[in-house]
Length: 226
Image 1: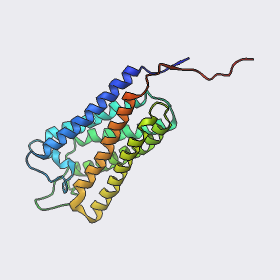
Image 2: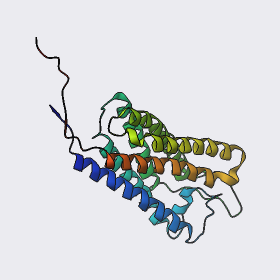
Image 3: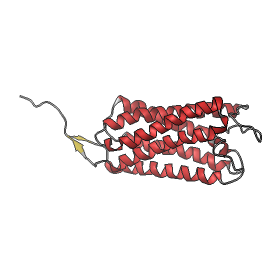
Image 4: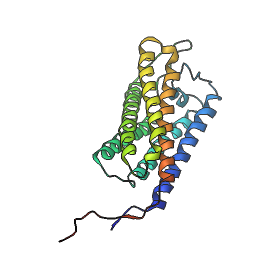
């Protein structure tokens, strides 16, 4: 018999990831109602880290990184341990790391009435590059790991919601690219669609891990000796 990772351990990590997603969303919503009252349709989420309550958003960025660590810790304790899982986890960790880095490089906020992407300082340029890298890495990981979820005997029931959120995230990324190029007044909305896809994916996969059968062992498939 081949022992499997402790089911309670992976459920604890999955629960922590679900809590992390909820906390992140709640903090985002609360900050939207505080000065300087950024417009969620026009203004990027990163703008919330600039202002009198910006330090809270910076903590939230770090919280998203820790949430990523939690979902990865849950995923790596689920079968199968394939190349798809390794690639997906690496991309997911990169996306989470980028979120943490954002807390230390504030974005550049445009003048009143100015819309679109603004990056004029070194910190702003780094923030923009890291944010784009993080979004792309996170969404690629969602796509790769969704295929892995489908192939996992324990998580197959979570495939449909994972696929739905991966598609939402991909559509959001495409919309974000279009908004940057031709419709900057919708950058905030497009970015939040991306976040909906990523955070929804994390929550749905964590829920699937949490409800997966607690099999303690699987039989090895060694051929019997004649």
